[in-house]
Length: 419
Image 1: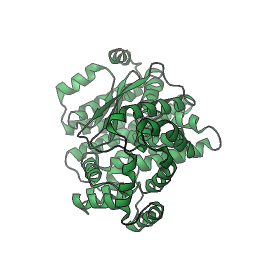
Image 2: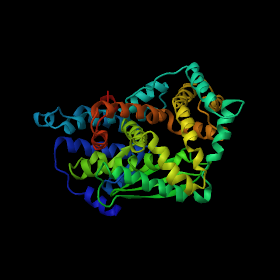
Image 3: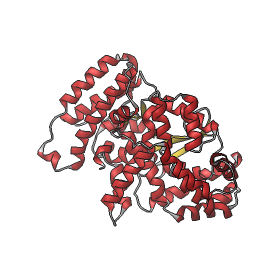
Image 4: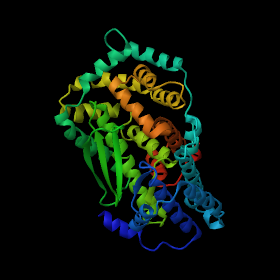
């Protein structure tokens, strides 16, 4: 199937100024991928372009110079473009993606940016700052809700141990969750015919889950089993990586922009770019969209807890506590900001995550490895969710939030355009 998609993508692209710009952009992303193993997250365009990038291995300085020229070559909008919102967004998108590419080149050449400078340059957004007092106040609320006595971190971790999915039941739970997420998504969104994904269980990763989009509306989703997986992660990962998250996002981009419009730039996904804030933010917001409020507790009590062999009688309390703990999401940003800015070392970052993000030490150390590998990328999850959610709620108003969400997924809208 992937070979068929490559053949589709390799069909002659109409020779327009923007399509020429788009082709040059894709080739620059592939060229940078030769210097940065994490940079090209997905590519299903002409196979020869990737082969050429591997053969040439263009130096970083030449990639940067070419990107600078390409930005200058982006033509002004025509009257026809201004009547087509997606065409106007396309120009802004390509310019901003290229600017982020130039920033990544400079980082690979040794440039040192602060956490906030880096996130603005790469992801078109800066996460809010929160002092320790902000997280202490949230911990007080959690302290009051948790059973038992003693330090909040230890009590929280001890309480959650009752809700670990047994390893032998992990796949059954995930497959059930995936089916539920897909069914709810299909109630509101039309997906391309033949879309699907497979699940693999892996180890020794700095992340908990990853979607590898293959093209042809197919994905491989990997779940890291290094650490215990709690029952809430089943819906989180099934929605975030699958429906209506990354799998749906990439499938809609391929269908709407690559196949229907011939915009080849969307056949490549540059990880360290503004696109990632939309991707991660929409994937996280999609969890709440698919399972709002009490619907999630009701669904999991009925469908997932029995499959996992867990007592559904504790589901309501578990998710009340889970909701309080979720308010600490920005604690991870603060740990990353302080660590990457050199304010604290790795051990102190682990301690911060244990204290304010309520992570077990092993999970906190895994997260610091994530900081080392992906740096300011962490803002895309929580800030991305907040920005996407605010946009959908504002534009959707009292109407169909799913329709606004679907339009966002199939568009080249930038994070700064969500405000």
